[in-house]
Image (spheres, helix red, strand yellow):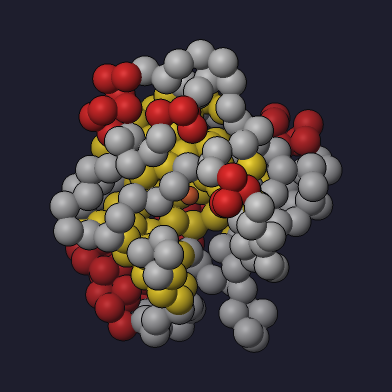
Length: 231
Ligand SMILES: [Fe+2]
């Protein structure tokens, strides 16, 4: 699959941007919401626990969150999955105990005009590494592992691809400091756009077409909230 409205998607692209849109109190409200929400999935393979932000658990916070995103993003629609009732989730909380692999969250629908994702760290330390490389196909996990590459995704699961690979050796210092959970040969030709060191109280706005992954810098666990948007 290739995204159909490529020109439009590209015209909306911009550099990653740090913003401060939530107060300490609001960050705490978001964490409390996380504790209240029912468990969605526990992905043993990726060692990540996910919860979806369902509306109406804290109506006041639903409104605050939506309005702050709107101030930062302009017009947008939620694109972070839907509930059984067809209601938009406001985001996905992910509590991880091991770093996530290199991937892109470009979605599963070729007709969607994918826009920004907003990452709000809630518990660190941690980093998200964004590469210069962009991807305009389906949500994909990037790997050179032959077994992984033969994986056949079910609905809602990432493709696997090694099409990100280029020729230049990856920066050894950056690999050692942030990415030692990834085979350096899986980073051939990749260049870093931004190393986002998580700061509680801050959010990062970044295009959904950027290839990214977590750094190896996880102490016990990290918790973040990501909202995917479309136009
Ligand atoms: Fe992601």
